[in-house]
Image (spheres, rainbow, N blue to C red):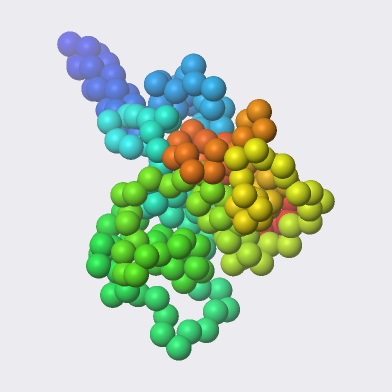
Length: 215
């Protein structure tokens, strides 16, 4: 009887671990829903590094558009954003936003992004729940490299995407030449919402580049 009770407790703890973390402890498989997804490997990689997390209930939801709050947290972890050697007459604070309050899961990340001028902000509204477009993500990633002073050396080729103006092209040169983000069939799709799976791929490449420079 005691053996059965112990076995039941072990099984309960095992399944509880799966539910809470989204990870199959015995195989290392993350989020069963993504196993046949085209970005499964990249999603597993960034999740294992603590850069991205699930959305709750053991789900990752790879094809949902990523929000500004989610991307802020991802970039915060990827680049270990901090104040660095910056000096301010008035440092950014939560008072600068009416829609970001202390204590939220994304609050500290948003504040560090503000310190490093990563996102374009309209007045005092960060819009944490608003989806991020591909060109916005491209700009945010480049700004993180600049903020952390990571001296990436690339062959600065001018990408030729059919759906970008000259001004828009300048905003994607960095991510295109580093391979962090690419277009498809000659199109960058700048104003399409960027999915969580696409962000996972971009951030995995980003981490690889950062490691090359020992950051």
